[in-house]
Image (tube, rainbow, N blue to C red; front, side, top):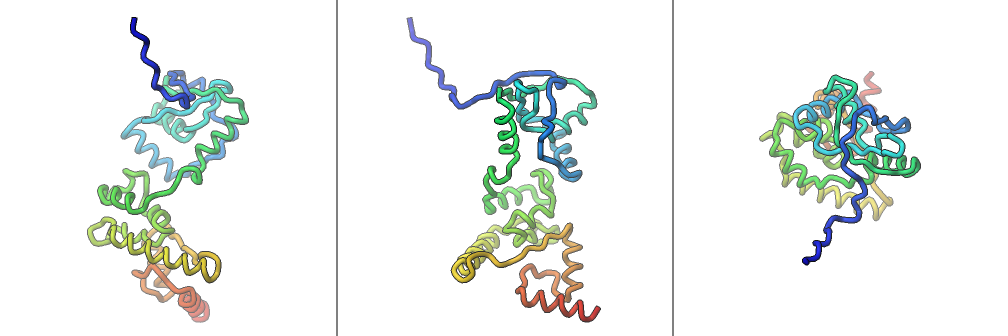
Length: 233
């Protein structure tokens, strides 16, 4: 008689896929994660388009939701009813471990960071639809080198897409700047301004008497420009 094949399933998978009723899931009262109206709209749009593509994490020991509060809230709104069935990743955890897992799953510092060149290539494929990736135009100002590359994705940028070579060059310049900063003053000594829109950014620069197309300014030049504005009233 042939021996049964040895299971190849990983021993590190600690959840069980279970289909349960929505009424069994309680939002964790301590959940520290919140979502703004704009982000919620993006999430709702994506959920309506693609559906729920990964299970929520539910602790059957306490009945609390561990991961997926925002998705569940939006799903409730889309469903338009108080109870329905859904498949969850069920775990069994004491409350202390549940809390630590909740925070860990929501902690951006534990999720790595973007490879800017690869992300830019993908953004390029989607052209004028950054919302397909969960972004809005302002997000790029923060993601790409703390705002240094956001202008590459402006609607009026030539081609309307990322210039990958420009990203490589910018990263080289920034790396050189950081190395010099570390050697002379022990770290970065620059500041980043993020505006709600390109129009507001350009209006601010014009108010300072500076060229709207510029994206980098010496601190002394900006200080002088602001000083002149204040003196002139």
